[in-house]
Image 1 (cartoon, rainbow, N blue to C red):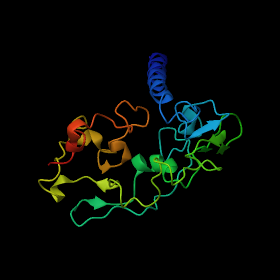
Image 2 (cartoon, rainbow, N blue to C red; image 1 turned 45 degrees about the vertical axis):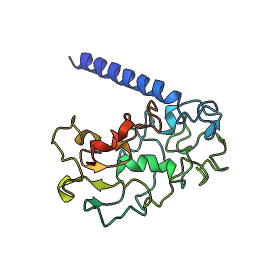
Image 3 (cartoon, rainbow, N blue to C red; image 1 turned 180 degrees about the vertical axis):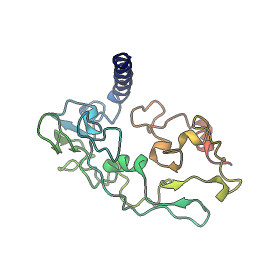
Image 4 (tube, rainbow, N blue to C red; image 1 turned 135 degrees about the vertical axis):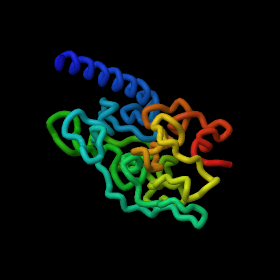
Length: 221
């Protein structure tokens, strides 16, 4: 029975990984390709997934076999007199994105490069969005920086009761909105609205935002 379950688990992992690879390969997150990522690619790099994931020695604190160097959560956060929900430093669902997009770490700075080398950099930077060390430059549209005060807030502990009439209340059901959008079922983070593996809806949105439908999953207007 254990052997059977192990085989089923391996098949599920293989299928899931294949789907994710198929999705990301033809997006700007394929940093091996000057065709799909003309402004941020690395010559000599051949493994698409390795910029974020590793099968061995991943960052267990971050999860998802995370392979990219990350910063501690030390950002200037969003603030407003019109929102009463608690806004703190970003959590995992944003920190993994910011590890490249805040521009302080090289996109190719990995915990575990391919082969026996351990931590290091993978490939040589190319494209106008990267500087010579592989970091995103401030001129890139992908650059967010460490000042998050002018972006959609992240690090929010979602509690519609703090702003009644302005936000959809949680249902307590993880497959229903807005709960299904929340990181760890609690927080509004980058991954609440973005899926780095799939650019079907542009800007890596998790679903269509036509007529602001995605916004209305949380907001009441």
